[in-house]
Amino acid sequence: MKLDKIIAVRNNKTIYRDGDKCLKVFDVSYSKSDVLNEALNQARVEETGLNIPRVLEVSKFGDKWTIVSDYISGKTLAQLMQENPDKKDQYLNMFTDLQLEMHSKTCPLLNKLKDKMNRKISMTDLNATVRYDLHTRLDAMPKHNKLCHGDFNPSNIIITDDGQPYILDWSHATQGNASADAARTYLLFWLSGDIAGADKYLKLFCEKSGTQLQYVQKWMPIVAASQTVKGNEKEREFLNSWINVVDYE
Image (cartoon, rainbow, N blue to C red; front, side, top):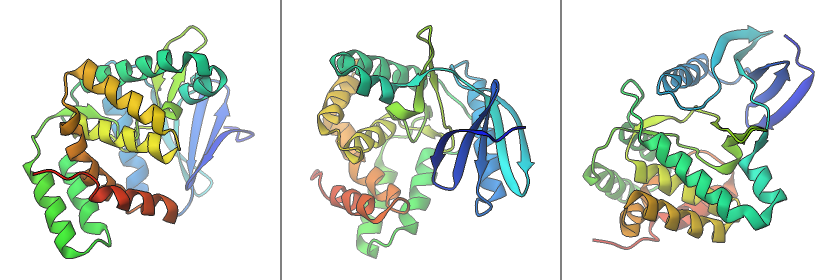
């Protein structure tokens, strides 16, 4: 394997291209179990028939764990939106349709979204009363078993030269409520500074899925709280502002 062409550098990992293969190389600080879990998530999602890169192998490159998968040639949807602002509405429609196609799938062996969020909320530095309230709200939400991505945003969608979309990065995949996944996507648009895009996306999601806006909004404080355990200080400050932003019974 050759590590001479860097595609992207992210927190604790570097992504390389080697011919028709993509190598995600994790820092030595990354736990073996997290790497293996990500590869297993991706392999399980492959079986749903969605367009995603296939896992080819999991190995070690030096002392670093590496996931080797198909290299998908194309541009991210985020790049296309930036290069063609006049087509952004068209791209948002494609983006939302792709998410709804994903939500139509089930993947019974994935971790449950509610279990993951409960663990994350317990790990936050929020006070005990707020944590209790969030756990109670989460437990009261309807249980679903739809395939959820957990980080569904335009930079994780590759559009090939012939127009085929592929969904990347399945490290946060779970099975659960699609509206929680949508709430996460909405917050990701906000975090990127695209508030107008966030609002357009959420309107599209609700219209296309037949979901009430208020229902997705009920997930916002829960999802925001579960995400505060990672990210930088600025992101945590933003997410904390969402924890009590939605007032409901």
